[in-house]
Length: 279
Image (tube, rainbow, N blue to C red; front, side):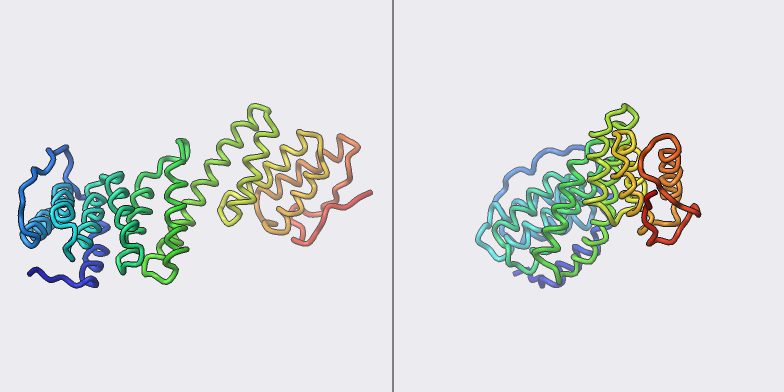
């Protein structure tokens, strides 16, 4: 009988994963049902995978599961099916196969890799920030699930790196929407999106701009107190940025043209602990 260790299987999966872009294109007919012994089916699937015919390899691994569901090879074949669908860029099929594996074998040694395949299948479909970001959120949820369920797995570290990129992407989408509403003079709607960046994506590169945009919106809404408080947060955390200097310019203009609270700032870049003052 064909023998492959689980550790060898995982190493093979991890080693081939970056080759996803090499999959053959073009639609192919479904694999015809032909009853075969498990060893022949599995070896044929591996041959197709070595030839980079990933979609047909996935279908043959599916046949192992379909024809021999109670064999020891069914479990290996299911995760290899998901892996090959991923390489063929058939991400919906990869997600379905990997999630099926997780439903049946949540405690398996290969379960972290199956969850990683789910997350990566979403990740590969992340769209430009100008488009709908529902898949980005799915990818983020899947990576968070990987970290939650398998924090010590070899895939958790990569999941954390990918999450940083996804959060920056999601924060960028909120910034784009917020700027749109601000240009349209819809200050409350703009504030909602800028506030979401500050609250939920505060470790991203978008936070300084989001705080400055909030200063703009609060001034436009006629609530300078909130603008001053937000500028103080911006100064404490990002004192050397363009966005803080811009917020100071706006607040000085507010002070000179209205009877709002005074804002004292001797330098364009004061010490981070400086707070807005009062007359």
